Length: 378
Image (spheres, rainbow, N blue to C red):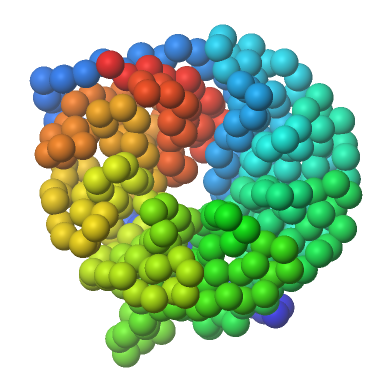
């Protein structure tokens, strides 16, 4: 499906509406940061650079004890996880837009023109493949197949050895949709993905066959904008359930075998889900951080301290749930009651992707300005 001028314009409108950030002078005023008594301390272990992200969102890949990072200008680097030393970096000729995935010695990124580039663990090019449009999210690798989601709603299965096409799934897109960096989840030979229009699908990893389709949320409202209800999170697949959140819709969990609805509750997420053994965590349209019960969807707590600060996706590290904001601050909240425990600043660039937990008390975060921080929280 080709995206013409009208639909591209609607994509931009939806994106601006979602993050309330077309300009810093429009929309509700972000909450000012207030003093508090810290209950924990966050410290930078080391800092490195991945290159500016442009208007795209990048997250680090992890393999063999190292981190792999990328930026819009084409830079890809392998960073020693212990000390932050750059083991190697390369400069591709392409403008990158999605990544990084690192698995079994293969490093994969996507470009603005729909190319998928694969490298070995030493940074040497292995192969490149072409998909149907720009790649907005990190690819995923499992069982010798690279799964790539492109911005036009297609999901591609490529051979991890040479990049040849194994299968392609083509989703039907509504007229108005949200530009999102949500990728796919792979579990036990099944690819799970959330789609525009509130759908979640399960595909066979081996051949791309549709196994089931379910509705996370149904469009409602009178205008096209009111009816936008795209799934904006990578599905969380655990304990026999696949769960996701939709913008202007619901959070819903489905049984993984047949897609039968387990539970759903009204919600409006703007990014990925954080998860621990008890709760899901999500950020709503007002930048309120919410915790809900994994078994029932019941509300546990809501933290409104960061209203309209354009929060990124949350993650769980140690005793805390952590989320970044549009000014490059990281905020740590107690998982039990949502009280603020710690705060730290980075380079001032927005933090939109979820921080990456890398141990019981450590995390990695990449800002839109391209800085990469290894942080310890105690």
